Length: 318
Image (cartoon, rainbow, N blue to C red; front, side, top):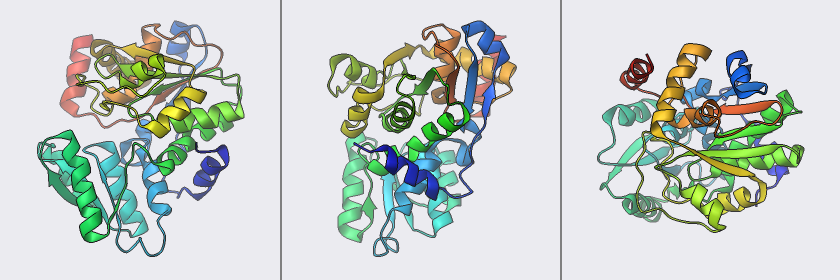
């Protein structure tokens, strides 16, 4: 388990490039939900998502002998770009393992930040085999982001910011995939305020952490089907799940249609551009799947949405 002190240390080391994102009050959603609602706007974070926090923490912890060799992880989205960006910032070589089917727009974004892209066959397990090969052949540190203490500590810095800005918080809603984000955030929030309620939100088509929470053990689902391409873990990590079991109070599910409606609502009413995975917590409030207790925080975890997708969501909501 990652203790609060480790999260506090991670926050103290964050560079100015990592934005202390605003906590914005939403009058419209507060009236609808029946409680004061604030958005934690990680969609405004550098590289467009909360992943910048953990990406920096991973690389910042490398020892002097490892830094010249660099580090590698597997991602085709927000973690990839954040890792590449922070590698450039720290002057540490980074490699990102991506499946061959990865959209070229995402590939080129990471290359612009300076990461080496290593392609692997279009199979989930091939990503880990390729990482292991890079480590054994080239001495690059292979980072398993599902089981990394640095990931939980870095993401936990979000919880500390929430507690500093809203110490009386009653409920915090958090998007969930492999569990590192909610594991770190919930640890920081509950250690500071045990009475606070932490709720995880997933798409119905990618509900591995929810099933695991209900069953009390890590559970793998056979397939994922959702528009939330940032929330596609087929099982939570064992370390994050230990934090979920200890600190998370509830899990909720929302449909893809409800998520698309939330994307449109956020753009029209809050003037915030949010990707599908970043909008599920807002969807849970808009559909009343979660009833907030007291002043509440809705985490908007990312804003990397294609213009065509945003336009389609707005058109459907019209």
